[in-house]
Image (cartoon, rainbow, N blue to C red):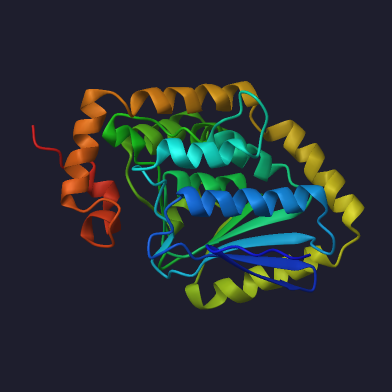
Length: 278
């Protein structure tokens, strides 16, 4: 299997494809990163070849993926649309397709995974995170929007109604330990153990006959994944809400404070969204 792109580094080893996000210090889900993710999913769907497991991690120790590029929503949406058919022009529907690729997918999270970055991790079959360094959050309600790329669908199924409302409407950051306790992720592991644990699990699964693993994933997906209509609805609502004056005002305030730039606002975004002058 060959895969070349500018924002994802890949290597194939013993049936495991390691895909390292490398799109700048924040790994924003913008045009380049979405385009490369679409290309990767297209390749796995067409012919996974020797790939049995896909592990997605980050070149940045501080950000798995901060969130979508809020300055380029129409542009990255157009790239995501190339992964689907008519009516599927959204990041959410692309990530739904990622959930159904015929290999096992694992998100290995160090640093912050918020907004669309968290939704990327949620779209994977499993998520393992650094206890000391991982942070999860869906901050959109703090700006007047809502998670539009599958976050509501996944979190409600994993956390249950009341905890999903806390996570989404509260728009706060979750430590890896709390995310594990709530069922948001599989496990929080000591940072020194994270790489070895994920490598061992990925290679263990990659060593099994692929037909049984793929059949099991299909059956579990059929029981647990959201209906496409619900994902399309969330995407349409997100795209409408981010155009509202109050949402634009809050995003502009955060941008003035440093949104989408490496610094204090992005580090503590779960706090920053609640610090809007009244």
